[in-house]
Amino acid sequence: MTPPRMTIVLIAVGALSACASGPKVPDWSLSALGHVQRFAEAYLSGDARVAPREFEQARADTARTGRPDLVARIELNRCAVQVASLDFAPCTGFDALAGDASAAERAYARYLAGQAAPADAPQLPPQHRAVAAGGTDVAAIDEPLARLIAAAELLRQGRATPAVVGQAVDTASSQGWRRPLLAWLGVQRQRAEQGGDAAEAARIGRRMDLVQSPARP
Image (cartoon, rainbow, N blue to C red):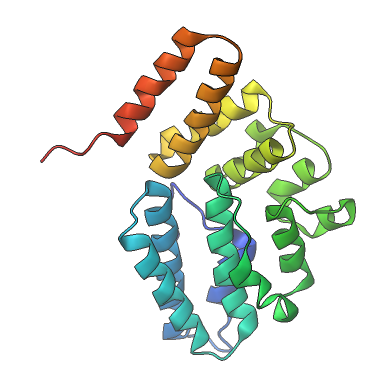
């Protein structure tokens, strides 16, 4: 079962657990889904040691099927958590497999890349359709990871209001997701500095220092 405080991107991995032709779910599917969940949690928490290992294991488990469409979902999930953390690096792992991915997954990949067209909106996961169609109400998105991804897309498009940035900060904070929290606090601090609010920038800086402080033994 997915941990209650984080739901993995549905379009990316939801079908992994539905690949069984009979009542018993294949072992590879259960293993891959578990590794995907642990990868996402480790990545968002800023665990640079665990995250790569879990991702590679999820990919290896899925590659055993010889189905590039399933491996593409693993890659797409990685891109989603990176975007949530304001890492807009190209999704090269998915791009290499895009020809075998579904139309909906290719639409989602374009959305993550900031290249979605209006025609892509109906093919996106429901929580992203409003933003893809021009909306800005990320607070209406219940799922934390999806809310961060939507906020990131608005930021990339220059449509992220202070309220959107604040929602992203609060979401990452409430989940204990250090990587996106630092990224979004950085956005807040930059805006405060650009607005000449030195006191606010300093306050945000102290908060960032706290997030980055080493754990006590």
